[in-house]
Each structure stands twice: as structure tokens, then as C-alpha cells.
Length: 170
Image (cartoon, rainbow, N blue to C red):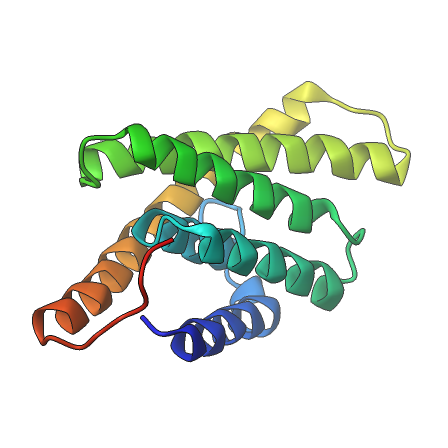
């Protein structure tokens, strides 16, 4: 995937999530397509460029949702770095490896985001409330991640198979 294609796709996913997809719920939770997209991109293209895309995506989410600037930016960046480090130790990028990674990353993202949101709002933290949101959210995010990962993998594989030159890994 080229740099321009990734940038356009990232912007489209962010705008769709913030405008249209934020009104749909699954198991009482809004699916986080942006997290699924950035995590899949980091696993498929395990390079520094993916960390930059995840960080910019987090910043866009923070700016467009009016949330506390920096929470999503830092969480997306750290998730991208962790994904790249963990996938470098994996023997292959099969679904057996990638799905548990997404489940764990989504759990940590949702848990830390929930705690930081409560702390910045000045509200009391109720761990029962956090877990009643975090567990369904990480399951929904993983369910959203699977088709996104398959789609992005196929796009990259088709370009590689057709002989189209793509960016060199760092």
C-alpha cells in the first residue's frame, strides 16, 4: 500500500467513525473501527511508518471528538509500538497469533482509556463499571479487527502478487 492510499484510507476511516459509525452499537458498545484499522496496519506493515500513522490517527480522533487531547494519541502510539515489537517475535502473522494480540491490545487500550477518562473528568472510578464496558468493547473491537485485517492483508497481497512495487520496509 502506498503512502497516499494509506493516508486517504486513514482519513476515511476516521471520518466514518466520528460521523456515521458512532451511532451504531454492538452488545451495547460502539465498535472502534479506528483502533481496528490502525492495529491491523501496524501488524501488516511492521515499520516506523505505521507508528506515525497510528499517532496521527489518534490525534485526529482526539481533535474531532473533542476528547482530552493526547489520550488517544498516546494510546494509539504505544499500541502500535507494542504491536510491532510483538509481531517481530512471532513466527508468522497468522490469525492464531494476531487475534489474541488484538484482544489483549484492545483490552489494555479500553482499560487505560477508561481509567484516564475517569481521572481527567474528576469522577470516582468504579472498577465494576469499567469492566462492564471494557470486556464487551475489547470483544467487539476484535470482531471488527478480523475483517479489517483480512481486507488490508488481501490488498497488500494483491499488489505484491501483481508485481506492483510497494514501499520498502524500514
